[in-house]
Length: 379
Image (cartoon, rainbow, N blue to C red; front, side, top):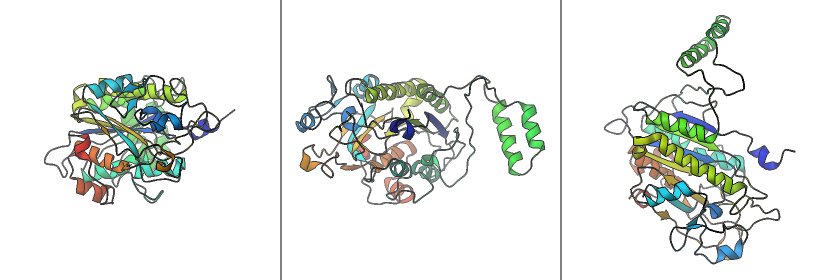
């Protein structure tokens, strides 16, 4: 039987790489790297980073708190499955932003994912992504290593796409077959086949894995190169846990372990370029404070953002905590988001691409009301 979670999360883990350094608004080629990990389905931020110092947490969701969260400060803890990320927090190369969300409250996956990638308040109001527009402003161009370039990195300039297959018993395209196809077509088909031929000739013949950890390693290794891509987008699906979400163990905690290992793989593969990198998670919305009748949580509002990278100088938990009493919840059911996550994205762009905040909010997000919180994350 295909359940709702599997239907909405049918997309496999994915990776897109884009952006090659050229001069732009900065005085020298951009050295910074940005990696976005899209957590599709809506991550439960209260389970990932529980406010253990808020007494209402245990009143509202007794069964949805890990039995042994790692204490970060008097108010917040973190799920014990984030072992690698916790080490990054201790070494001052990670931070957390809590009670945050993109400016979207209607709880639709499709609309929420669109808003989180476009950075627009109105779903489907633009066909470019906030990171793609940031690359335009910084004059970073290049090709995308993906089957279908994520909306997040789509900007004004066009770029090439290529995604190595990993279908059982398949090989790289044979030159004879490509020539045969090219000779029977003309125009754009010929151009596309020429590009595919060039990429295939320069690619290893072995099959490429598409699991999240292998893709994270591929991203790190590619971005480590001096002339490698400056941007990577990783997708981890299946966070839509309407039933059996788990607490200390279970489906959501299993995804926490996967996400934790992705952070670790990126750091290991980037090596010295980790110092020039910021990694941030995004999710379309959080989940309800109280569990439903199926031991899961439904679509909500506020969640949490996890950030790591050498561009962070001092770890912190950034939050304007709204509280979890019923009167403090959004529509009496959701964690209230007090920080617009676009301000977090803007800070990451400022850190990596060295663009001015006013330029970012004007040209990238087209909303000058977005607050600058750079100093809270990259102090």
